[in-house]
Image (tube, helix red, strand yellow):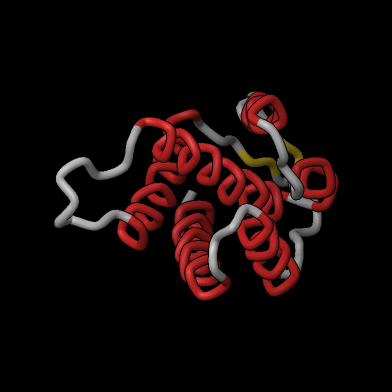
Length: 135
């Protein structure tokens, strides 16, 4: 049976990439104040909300069903802890279109416009797929 090993560095790297995508869409470089700490914290949570379901979707249905709808920081932390176990048994991955539409919808529910959500999620899926297939 194939297994996946997910590192904390990998999770952090992917979440930071999503945060950077969001900052690119929302941060006005002419604004000297940029985003306040609260805005950055929200983006950090949104990074988890995007990355964790995508990673679990590539690993398999059981973890995806458990973490596809992360609503709190506590749920995000639980998902991270599950993913950081030494080995995760690989199951049948979630259909990419299903995963993409569900994660996009979760961002829309958080107030992210659909076109921005599509861009952020599509970028995240590509990056994560590239990294997981190279491992």
